[in-house]
Image (cartoon, rainbow, N blue to C red; front, side, top):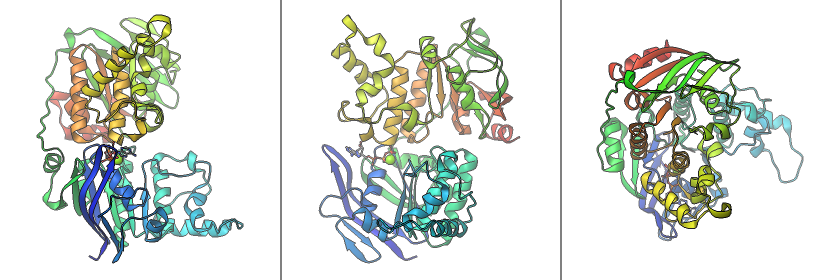
Length: 494
Ligand SMILES: Nc1ncnc2c1ncn2[C@@H]1O[C@H](COP(=O)(O)OP(=O)(O)OP(=O)(O)O)[C@@H](O)[C@H]1O
Ligand SMILES: [Mg+2]
């Protein structure tokens, strides 16, 4: 296959952080090339250099179809056929599908906009890759998965030769991931090169021809995906080995902390009854639309049920806000770190302690600097958040490290019930391991945990008991140590 792009001796520093050190990479037309590495290993930085958002240090070379550059700007990069789909997708939510796809091709300076041409372009782009969306729907009314399709069609409309997707599957369900991977194969058939960044090693191995591994800004190597498995990749990424097993606990001996009886909310979930015991990790899994997240939000006071009861330590709870939930010792870590979890412009430190400001307040409502710093430092250390200075804004952290700040924020409230909704989405394997470790530690101290996840291995290996939800109902219950991935997979798809 012809080489489309070649990088040689690419380095990048941000202040004291060596984000990339002497990285070489070749990308061929018609290949799917996955980029993997732990949080902060430099994947997004490498992408920003290819897309011209950041210049590399002097000495590096970028060669695109035999033309050599010392650095690119975004216009040159786009002209060369490079399109990046960032995690936030950079779409205009208040414009329609057609406008989002086609508008870039038909904005001739300040001239009038040719709406018919926009529609035609959008339609052609969708047809080329077999996507079928209503052109006149506003993007804000689409699911994340469909928004992603719009972003990919926009790349098609721009005649992309290289499409880079930075963690495209982080907020998708398994079903949607399958659809996206099918589309990636379609792009490949058209001779387009795809660079795919993901923390889900199973899907990386499913779709990639070659995999490049980064560790601490250095390239470990580029490998043939056929010769890899997720264990080998994890070891290359981290230099560590991993083992999982969660010992069974005797639930009958444990006090019930949280229970629901016939909890219902029209359109979301129905007749949900379960008990959650002290120190128990209860996994909940199911397909898209199973009502898991809606249920979790109700338990956190944000999506009030319209029938049934919630009890906490034997007392009936009628939560009307998340503030009340927090006051009752219930914490919720959402799956959507970028929109719900953090104030990106604010320092890491204040994001970490925002939930416990009341507790830290001393004389006259002031927060003693020392208490603030020691709380922040403790969580940064416990969750191994990679950070040079906790007073930097959260947005300077890599994606996975942002997720850890969200977790720290909730852990700091010392909850009695901790609800984790897809807590490891976008988090690399050793950070995942760190999060599981912390969750187990909390459970061992008596915290009752609900672990919601799409990933069957995640609920299986890190919960004591698993509930399956489907169309808003609980359709199965399994003890983890008596179950298997296959058994759960069958139950989820039944
Ligand atoms: N604008 C910036 N200012 C300061 N440091 C930065 C900046 N951008 C990235 N970094 C640092 O460079 C390193 C590499 O970050 P990068 O975002 O490339 O990681 P990543 O591999 O994409 O991680 P993740 O899997 O968490 O998304 C990190 O230590 C990060 O904090
Ligand atoms: Mg990244």
